[in-house]
Amino acid sequence: MCTFIENYQPTKLEWRVLDYYKRRGIQSPTEIDIELFAKESGVWVHHAPIESKYYEMVDGMYSIIVDSRPPQLQQRVELAHEYGHVLLHTGDQEILCQAERIRQEREANHFAMYALAPTYLIAQYMIEDCSWHSQVVHLADKFNVPLPFMDARLRLLAQGVYGVSPGSIRKAEFICESIEDYDYSYRHPLDETLEYVVCDGKILHLRKRTTV
Picture 1 (cartoon, rainbow, N blue to C red):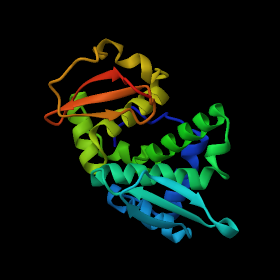
Picture 2: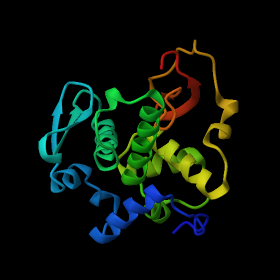
Picture 3: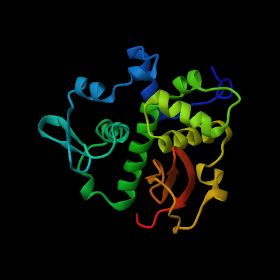
């Protein structure tokens, strides 16, 4: 187990996830099945080629639609995000004020990170004395999540351990919008104003998104 997070104190939201996983006896990333967890809690999950969202139906029942068009790894992230809304929020987001909608989106984003890559399992699977890139690649594979998602998850963990703001960690790597030599961009899982630029399985930079 990696020792640098021994004194890490989970947030209240993370404690809720950890308590649930402890009660289920989750000891491996392969046991994290958000779709199964949702279905067992009475939430209907359906995959369709439309934007991911959740619906509150009659008698407090919920339904989640997961966009079937992105890669499977991204579908897992979107399912965890929507399931976070179901567990944490009630009502129709469309009628909320902007500030409240942003707050709920932030909470659902954090829930997805804690649910798909809980800290106690990250500690078990981290490699000591390796580069940041190698660590991210290794853990993204172990936890079955996109590379940028794991990069953001580890930086969120570093914020909790060292008190460093995620936005201040890699400011030197911000680039202009005109870069063309990359495979794809990926919206930052915690900051919708930023996106990762990825090429050949490696994160090149963070940059400002042109549209938010």
